[in-house]
Image (cartoon, protein in one colour):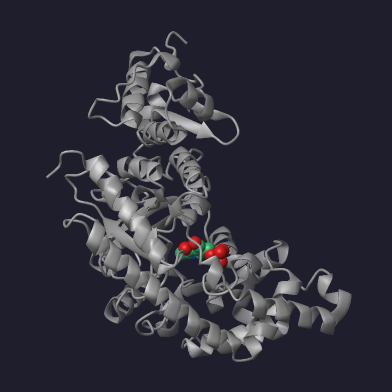
Length: 490
Ligand SMILES: Cc1ncc(COP(=O)(O)O)c(C=O)c1O
């Protein structure tokens, strides 16, 4: 290496943020050949020390370089300069069409990890609030089933799962308008395993899949490296743009569309009934499978949402996944898939060969918990608390953020989607200032398959994680971070 990164000259007085100064210096060295292909970049911690900057500044610089296709990271091995040809072929950010490299995501995970420091008010993670989980009632359920069933409960369970729990889920689904039997219900280790089971069973290399843009980032990870081509279906303030769908179906002939129609992650948007009906008609006409992820359904705040696609699906095209992670017990890892009749046998065969069924102890404890009135009471309390938190966030945004910011008004779920003014700092730039002032969020571009206008100036805030006073404090910090990042912007 003819170029020593430690020699980069940083100017704190420059209007360019420090992370961009680092990123530009490294990009220039890569362009000129001073940092040749395959060079390993210094590890972030010692490099930050050498440069006298915060580690997040270096992590952000690397994230930008990865998103621009200059470098790739490999977990445990570090970050490497890509060669020119690989660079030319790497879209922004790396696309699933060139599997194997998901470097922007690796860096971004690192950024999210840094946000877990105790002094930081984080709105970043995609999880429910720990203080609202029903620990006492669940302890009672665990003790009761352990006492009742003895050591048998600690054994391997049946691969189909615990039958009484399946029956309880079938009954709950009937309440959502979904008619199914145990034979079409597959218990999985969390909703994500359900998605993995479906993708693995239904799709093969060379297939095309549509995903909402933006979408749940781990769904992108599940497709990554599988040889499956992912394409994006743009969304607006009412969910996926079904008006664009007929054209995309004719052009791409995708096998499946993955979507979260209710309280979407990351935007919080719920798809109106008419769009659901139109989508189902198109799916039936084009023999398109819909993979409906309904994991936020229980968390409505103002009024119950429209029925799931699965409940409206006369043509039996919808594969339905849900679970108890967001409303009750993320750590118990209990989810499920409801299969269309034509996929039942294939899913059953795949389910049998994979160890995806949740642990017996949790299945039986959850079944016990679901029997009484306590689940309904828990949801009632949860909705009341989460509504207060959502409203506190909206109030705080109106108070502390610049007037030209806009945001979604989520009717449920966990997330609010904030759009920053396009002529101001990007979400990545804001992130650096935000961490320095003790607040964190999930930058919007993480949820995009391809860059598009708006991706760089959007961010996701989880509104349930903190009590209202802490939310207000966090957004006050975010407002200050924005002022810092925006500098002299009027
Ligand atoms: C849309 C969506 N699907 C699935 C999951 C994963 O759920 P689980 O914890 O049940 O695997 C998440 C979690 O963030 C999610 O947002």
